[in-house]
Length: 401
Image 1 (cartoon, helix red, strand yellow):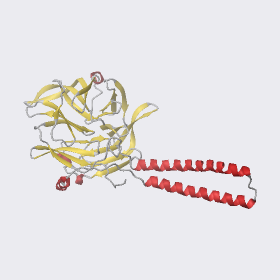
Image 2 (tube, helix red, strand yellow):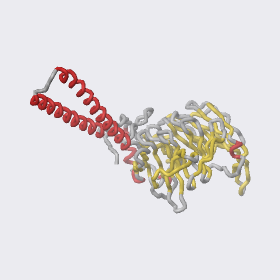
Image 3 (cartoon, one colour):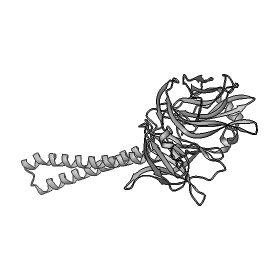
Image 4 (cartoon, helix red, strand yellow):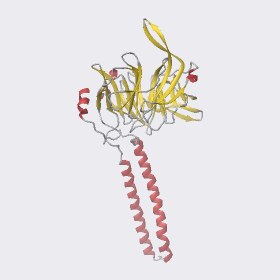
């Protein structure tokens, strides 16, 4: 499968957005049928008027006006039904994100920069970010555009007693990094770092590696009840942050103030922001199922509620969940492949099965979705880091399930 993938990367091709027209054409057909009905009524009235012999000047002057009103009324009704047809089409196949175009360009990019060891990785828009260490154990934060061959080092002064624990990127391609204080400890002769949570910060870095914002969240973590879970870090369009702590989603402002503790009916496993701007989560229930949930506001405040979707069981966690170019949400599982969620219809569709992946899930060291719908996988081959770009958007000419 990898050989087939590499063969297909002889050139890069891009496709335009997909617009499904079946429902619109159907609506147009309905309008034509209604216009035919109106014409039949007009002919019938003309015949009746001629036969009765009661036609007069007043009728001749008012009849066209009354029929014009009637035709407008029918036209409005047909227009409403056409709108309903268009809405149905949008629900079946979401319109591409205004800022992104679905790409089916497969690519395999060997890394040409210096060697590194990855700690945290994320993607967003057309950007890749990586926090790790160089061969001399010096930490660094790197950034690069999609399909580039080398990370640029961000001009960010990283605190010595803190480590980057989580990263996420927004739809503009800016990176948000959560730093947590650590202390060194000797474990069997090996220096390891333990998180203390005495200090917690989130910094925002722009697409050029420059510091854009910085927020202190230390007060939020003063209580031991709040501890972030693995891969559970998201940012919404307004710049608010969402962290998962067991069965709660912790919402903080961009300035670091606690905005709420959102309950969930299971153990949280992942967080992400959909194309609509809604915040989604994956949580496990007591009976072993993994459900897709969404943060919604009810009478008693915000709560993470089920979307009615039970995720396919797999031998791995869902590692990334992000907005798609043609779907409300894309999800990646190392053992299960790539899935797409249509927020309107509530349907889950498998876009890529594991056998179609160019990289075995267990060999993927890092992953993330790009704005054009491609899944970016980082792996190691022959002692070299390699980036695979795998199309996960629906290609031109493809319909829904």
